[in-house]
Image 1 (cartoon, helix red, strand yellow):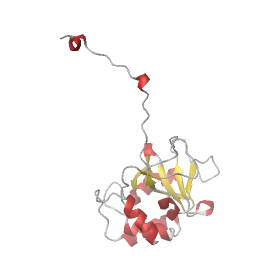
Image 2: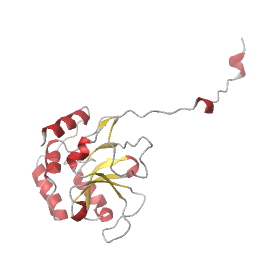
Image 3: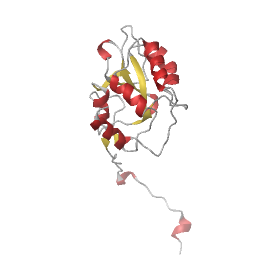
Image 4: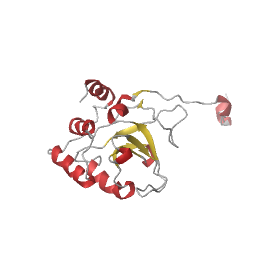
Length: 188
């Protein structure tokens, strides 16, 4: 794995949240590749073996290439964590089984996004190796239907390199705040 990407991952992964890995990760990767009939991109396989099934620290976000319908005005999106070869609810194999019928075989879910959306890696054709945001409010098909994928990065390594610390500003308009005091509080 690229040393710079490894350093970035060490910076953004929340090591306080431990995710137990399955023992035979190579066999799980082979199973996933067989299910889709592809070889997963090498940098993503290396990530699965080293880090898969991890959570991202709060306030570490990325700027996508294409803005999604849910990207805030500041242009930064966030994820909760990456699916991996684990023994818990972040198990990528069970996530794949849940979404393969919806997503088809051109992309595979690799992380959760806010609001039930997914981060996916492209597996075939024009999608191969690229990272996409899947907007779940609309259906997606491989057969030429309208697609709801938004390009985040041109590779997995580029996606990881896009993460940076970004604290969202909370805009509060003080003119919109009304204070009501009980009359008992106003008495001496």
